[in-house]
Image (cartoon, rainbow, N blue to C red):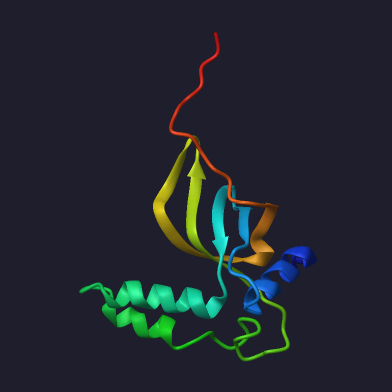
Length: 133
């Protein structure tokens, strides 16, 4: 059984409390680097639901995200006393080399227990490569 980083859980709990949605964070999960801003789960679910609802093919899935957190998902789920188990990113990108995937602001849900490294801040990337002489 893994032991999630308590500091990261505390940061997520503060975001979930609605006191801030301006926290930028960069995490490493399974070798992928994800960088962006954290959002409370309810806000994240609402935004994903809106995006899906606007799609002809994916509209039916909108209700799943609009229904609210599943039991055991943390403070908004079935066990309100439990600490958050997920980070909810918006305005996020997966960084690969010197490019960012989903440059328009992806919506990612990451299990806190899967985070192997993290830092405060949104890591930027450059479209310009550097060369050595």
